[in-house]
Length: 272
Image 1: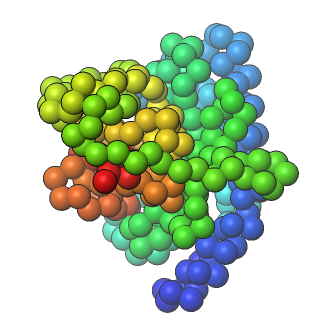
Image 2: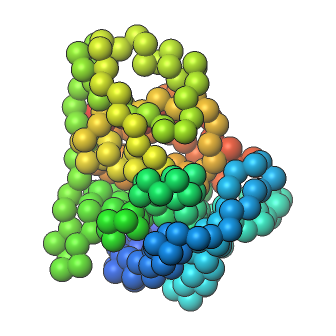
């Protein structure tokens, strides 16, 4: 994927569409490794430099997926939460790259809530163009490719198209999805102005899936999280008819930034 013109990009995304089954198999393999550790119930928990937890499941999943991606797409570099991030002086020249979170929701994994995911996204010139979100406990994958739609994966090829909800911000009982682990006053201020919202707690990137499926409507996030946390979810929501935008500017999130940290954002269905 070295070209820089629109025709080349279309060809590359067509190839990605043909690779969905291979990516599903790769993420399913990583998912099984995660579940083997999860169901055993005894695993070491270490702390990274930011005090977030990391387990053997994170690391095994990372090895399986990164090695698999290198075999399938040897020319596309990978940025993973569980690997050393390349210096921006190198990354700035990347037209294409993978963004990977091999186990999103490690806190939920440790707590045995079942709400954790594998997030994989393809980035082209700072924009997410394909995303794959695997939920191990369901043995299921959701995916989206730019211009092709968002789907729940089905092995027989009859994938189920996803569609967001339609709503207005002043209507009563908007379904607001919120984090189980991160509650803050800035986010609460976006919720307080709504008309008797219904709050729904979900862990990890499952929040994005719930919006893409039309099960929830609105997700304000006023705490910084990383690019690999949102990329796959963003295109899933966008291709299902919704949006994930910066809270202040209303612009879509951009990827492969110098710090890899996202601005505050709002994910939602279609706001009328």
